Image (cartoon, rainbow, N blue to C red; front, side, top):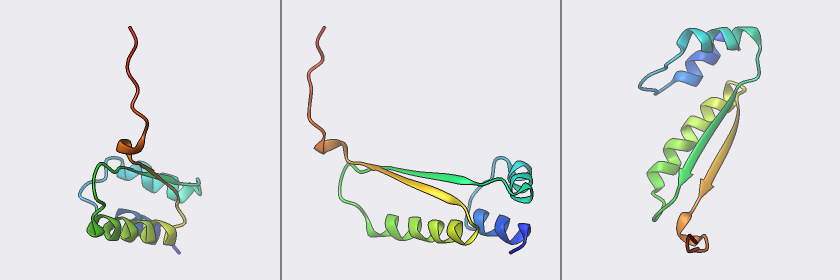
Amino acid sequence: MTSDDKFNLITRNLEEVLTEQELKQLIESGTPLKHYIGFEISGKVHLGTGLATMRIIKNLQEACVNFVILAIQLDILPQTEAKI
């Protein structure tokens, strides 16, 4: 897969790429790329969110990008009172 192919996969369906030139340089240099996706689940999870996220992850996997998915559901954490 060429550097241009990887760049196109990584940026597919994105609204904006803030550092396009830097991303191209990282891909061409062979620097391992990492991506983080974070979710704060405060209600029911919507199927559309999962499908859209999986599409992004699929593109990143094809472009050999390592990624981490972080998910937290705040309403299941124990409630603590602040002590002054």
